[in-house]
Amino acid sequence: MERYSVASSNIASIGYDADVETLEIEFLNGSIYQYFNVPQNMYDKIKQAGSKGRFLNTYIKNAYPFSRVG
Image (tube, rainbow, N blue to C red):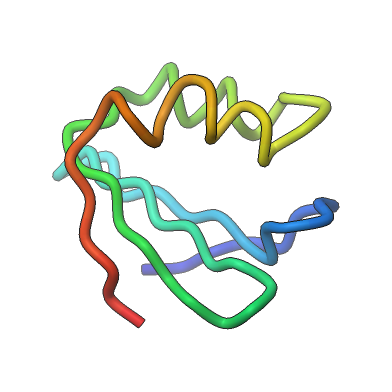
């Protein structure tokens, strides 16, 4: 999955696969997580969020199933 770099104190890059509604987050420590069943509008919102980490913690982490992939 292709990710793009973001300005964040905790997140290095973000990617999204619309076909399977999977959000991929790479953290600055090198770990990579995939969040499943994430709708396109949530991906659009995290891209626009002033604080990507706060958005992730508030709206994504406890709302969608995930798996560490790296």
